[in-house]
Image 1: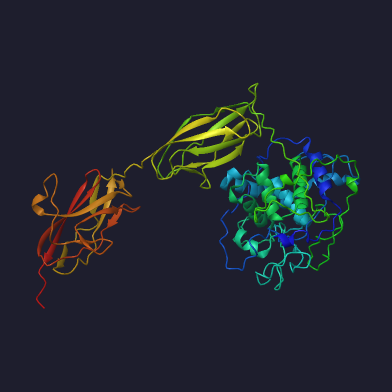
Image 2 (image 1 turned 120 degrees about the vertical axis):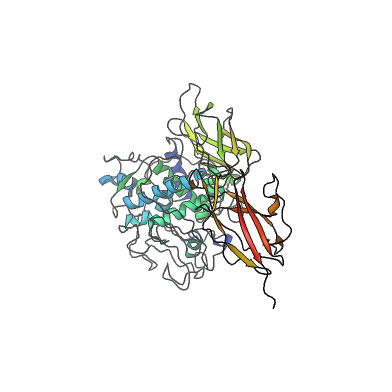
Length: 585
């Protein structure tokens, strides 16, 4: 990745210092927490994209391939509250209000992705405002929301050719299918995925059966999946920084995205599709012939305010690269390449006590989900609920129970009522007891423990075993029974599925004994190794309550033999087997 740093094309007027200062100003009155309860009501397809047979880019290549991006910064006036329609003071013609708005389909896609990830990976704490910030910087919110009714961009949004001239060198990996370039890759769509990265991260976000990087629903869900990868908790500043830097490994990019993130968290509203604000200096023809409009010279007149001096230029704070492990991030445009320390996002948890809500004892059957999830309430010293507190739930003890996503721990945020509910908990197969502990991250608060127990599955029962037909079963010595033997299990007149059944060849004279004797001659089965056996134990009825026995073979003994089928609770069915002497050859 190092050769790419410092060579990305930018033509905006923003600098790292301006980005940090703007973010500091916006952070000053920031409400706590990332959590949002405003979800789209669309049904999202959240299937994980299967890897496709493509030539991948280098392992440390960022999502957008290190392509150019918009460097406009948000206005320093307060944006709308969600749903507000009043004009705000600021720029002429309500420009501040327009800047705070997000086109309807684009906004719906971001909120839909947040809702999907809250269900599939709740410990990530993905806020839709982060997707909005990246979408703003990457494509100007799909170029002002220029999308059709399905959320697909009306015209392609393409980055410059990644031909090594000012950008990364990434040769074509998709045959031009997405970017129309069969020589080099280009970043594609509202979230600017390079084709080789889309091959692994692409998602179907609008349920149309396709994974299209030009569709804002697909692209937003894919971007959310990437940001949440590697167990990241985006309510933790270090994880948030690493996720953003993985998109485009630049300190200036990080600070620009964070400034928009803070801006959108303070409020936004919905605009009609196509009515969004284009980045300043946007060139609709796309200076590189791509139609991307991503390289126009940015104008920052609305930042002519006196800005507070940014604090801290400390290399020790530089986040580690998620790809290379390097702690050094070069910032283009700066002769010394000294990174600027980002302004930390305050957590403002304020929680002084943590208490359980509901039962503290949980139980489930092996292989099932727990019916209830642990719940706790965070309050301050005055016993008032604390919103936005980060509560970490951790599974402790010897168990294979896991939270959704197959993780042993997850961090969730308290709501306005101070309550944080743990993600759904799956019992696993191992029986026994374990503990789920809830703690407040970053606060010296007494934990809350929940006792959890996984019980063994109840053994399915059957009070009747019966053959499906009454046809006599006959075979010759040295052969096998050609007619299959199928039985059906019921319990109180209803089908009994998954009932364990044992099949044993017994001697007829021991049929009435408490412990029948296994026969050592006559019909037999073959086990998985091809050995002859006269007892099978790994048998179960199917969902219809039926069981067809494996092939029954015969040795050189003729006569009448008895096969006994037995359930665990003692239901018995005896089946007579007749073997006649084969004719001499």
